[in-house]
Length: 320
Figure 1: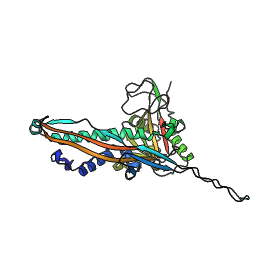
Figure 2: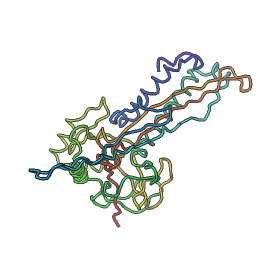
Figure 3: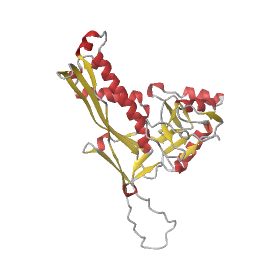
Figure 4: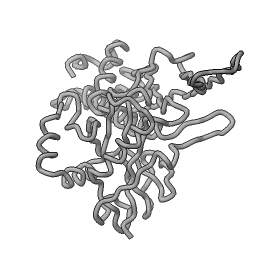
């Protein structure tokens, strides 16, 4: 964090923005593999994505004229930018002078890391949820959710009970086939797995599959290998679903019957948009006898297609 070695109160906002953008990229590799619509933000608050209506019908060897002209009914997918802000931290003056390290630098790094982690968690949730005009809130359809099929495995998350079926290579193949049936482009496909599910997937691989997986790694860009046409990413948290298949908000406690989920997507099917970033600082505050800092990021995203094509969740199935 070389740029941050001077007083926090003197950090230009553009330097802070560059710093947090880089932190978002490092902590959240999935953000690099979504369509970036940051330039399309309207009024600093919302993004509109036009969705084409039904394609024209095709008639073979047309005999009847004139042909009937149909109006294409286009729709609009809309999503807002969420506002993420950290609680302020007070750094007393005497600590800045008595500690052997740059306390302000450390505190700022903590704020940025927490923001990046929270934004990354919520982006997955935003991709599988949304708002559709008069229909209100909508979630990824059940037809886009695949259940795991592996052997019975004890749950790992605090709050869960019982056993779930393990994540296997066959489950990833099923996701690949579903996307193929949706006529989703074969390129730029990604899958992010929670750490334990990734280990289950690796355990299910044959020797040849494992060798090919390792050879296809691109660790510099967060890709740990490639399987079934998906570039595989790993994260400690991805998605959680209720037993009814409803996505849960990040940070919610696990219920006994909740299930961990992985997410597969094609890059053109999901969007992200970064709005304003802001570092707030009050140096030498006479009421606090020191400095007070906090930070804010505006960021949003969602599935770009009204039909949800190119987005598939693979969710733990109960083994009972």
